[in-house]
Image 1 (tube, helix red, strand yellow):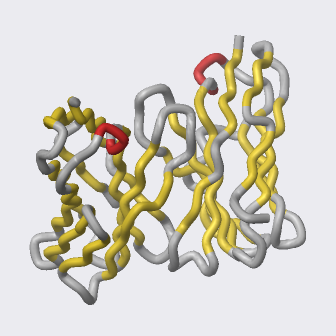
Image 2: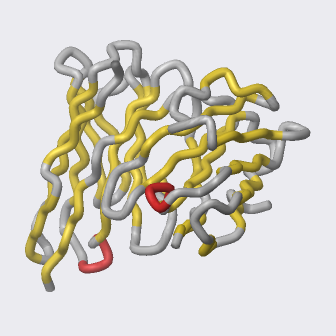
Length: 113
Length: 110
């Protein structure tokens, strides 16, 4: 596609439910990043993929968070047993190699009620 | 650990004036420094970037300067317009990870 696409754009879920957030990177980009942005805050690194591998998962806040990437393309971020503090905008970015310009999607706004 | 400090957190300027946002990074291995503009409800948009082998780069009303010795880099916006109002983030790229500053909310007053 023309840009990084994320879905859904908005998600409201009940506390304790699981959610899946999807990222479709720019075609041909091997590097993919997930960041979290809480209201009015900066961008918190969650995980980095190079191809299908995740050499850096250091930013995942707890074992309720996991991510995978298949076919070197689409990535899914899964949050299990959601908590209210998980409410944030989850941003995905991709770049050609991991050492070039990174382009962001529009984000998924997650609200846990 | 790696860290990027960004100042100021908020900045108000009159339309037509210049705006300057400054960042300092800690990882001396960082070699690429992008700037992003984020409008309300949207993802960050890359507006300009600079690599460690140059000291300055300009694109119309926007310029970025880099001082590798001091580990400082700055964004300069001249002749500001109301549509420049947004949150601006600096970032530093090490081996593969982007570390972001905490953002500057720029308000251009008409």
